[in-house]
Image 1 (cartoon, one colour):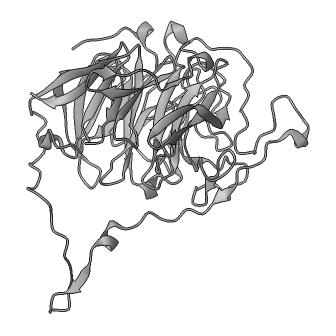
Image 2 (tube, one colour):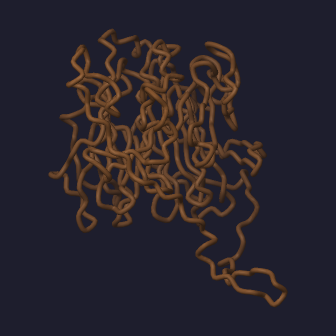
Image 3 (cartoon, helix red, strand yellow):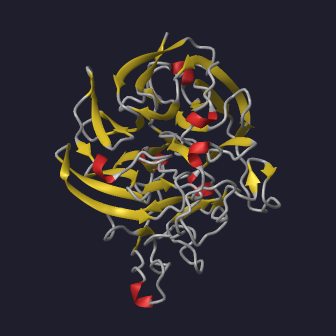
Amino acid sequence: MRTRRHRDLPLRSTSPLHRRWLRPVVVGAVAGLLLAACSDDPEEAAEPPPVVDAEPAPDPSDDAEVAEDGQGEEVTDAEPEGDPAPAPDLSVGLQLTEVAELGSPTAGATGPDGRLYLADRGGTVHPLTEEGADEAVVDISAETTVESERGLLGLAFAADGAELYLSSTDPDGATTVTAVAVEDGQVRSDERRTVFTLDQPYANHNGGDLHIGPDGFLYLGLGDGGGAGDPLEAGQDLSTPLGALLRIDPQGGDPYAVPSTNPFLDTEGAAPEIMAYGLRNPWRFSFDPVTEEVWIADVGQDEREEINRLTLEELRGANLGWNLMEGTREFAGAEPEDHIRPVYEYDTRGPEGCAVTGGVVYRGAAIPELTGVYLYADYCNGTVRGLRVDEAGEVVEQAELGIDGGAVVSFATDADGEVYVLDLDGGVRRIDPA
């Protein structure tokens, strides 16, 4: 087992690199709920984003043709395709195949052309080819900084493929979501617009991961703003988007709209973008493309690293506990009645590592033994692990998979469902059968 020293870690507030940055605490122009910094003039308040209708996701069973079987029972003509997947086997032989090398890869997303695009922390986006990472199709290196936990941190394509979304921090550290136009499957780096901005009070705990959910909306994970122990108490504060998972419609308004089913639209003083709250530093979340469940890994403070698994319905309005709770342990107060406990947790600075890196549920074809298994890692350890959870949310099995991804900061999935491990030290490696 490899172990990285805390001072090399880009995710924690305990590192000497992550001392508190004492610049003024200002929440940016988000939701139109907060006045501009240092101003008492209500005319300077930003306009609230429009609200757009959010239709419930279609029921997959509606697509099946229903007929009568002669006994008054409804049957469908849908039949399973191919052989059933074998039982999950976390002892299956695996290997990592290096497919590209970047400066510091941080995220990946599949484009409308079917290629996997990779984000480099320094501010560039590269399509993956058989020869490796191609030339950058987007370069925002002059508009970001890699100081502390900053940089280009997330990547996602719109559900209709018309835009590429970048999550980054600007030179002053503010979280910024940028939309880049995509035309006929080609990224148009010269056509960009700013979708969302939020000032960050400290240089760490930016979160920054973003994904398109099964409902077609854009989800953005944000940390509590930084500083050890959540000094702003942002985790339980619904008036700030910090420490929360946000949901917006980036194409529904100027610069974005809020879905009508967001849970806190009618809560006075709450940021309407919030979908779930109580997060310290959600370092990678993902949606299972089959079950549509969301998996959120939240980096701990001193004691517990946690992994959360929720349905979309459970996610709406969920309180994941921080900073009253760190995993299942009380941190700054008593456990709230609405706290949703993690499905799995482990000791910070224990044998499994010191800073969880969230992953993905495997849905590829190359390794059927991993079908339905959640793959994740830890930045300080590097060993890729598998987690099996039953329908009741109970852990069935957790095991090391015998492969070491290095300084693992993210996972990516290609158009075929195959999984790539991203090493902050440069390597992009695909998980293959041995």
